[in-house]
Image 1 (cartoon, one colour):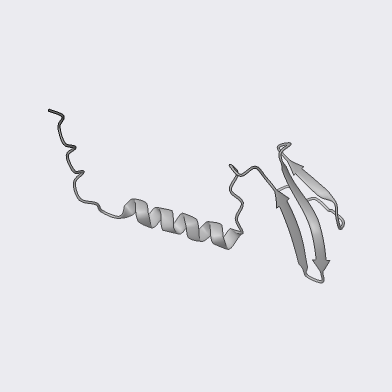
Image 2: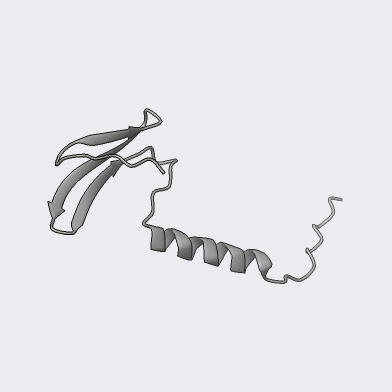
Length: 73
């Protein structure tokens, strides 16, 4: 893990296209602003974990047979 120190209003640039900015610091809470292309999903850890859990559950559900497509005449 890379650990960086930043002050208020300073940025971290990731891959030349994602900007993480320290927006506010209140005691033990740091507020970050993140600018990323819309194609890059950005989630809090707990939200990401829930998405992964839901995806795994959906992938493991048993499904019925695939319906046949109507044949062209």
